[in-house]
Length: 119
Image (cartoon, rainbow, N blue to C red; front, side, top):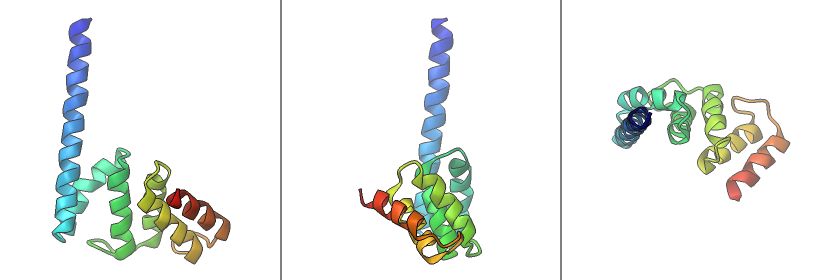
């Protein structure tokens, strides 16, 4: 039983290290304006629920960096990250609601997310 638990811990730890490495590589590619590589590295991590990767994908869709500008897709990724407490994404989601970019304009939702981003 002990060996099984140890093996499971090693698998989880190696998977976490791989995700962290891909996240760092994805952020590095983004900073070098290599958006195609950033997208390739970050999307799988974002789909697994990583808030940092989700927030950066939201930013890429918001600005049209390496992808077609898509406010709806930006709001989707920012919402996923914002719900996990990512302050940057909370602010961007609030702005999306305030201006009606990718979501229906809703000042109450905007205020809610602006408040959360400020806390």
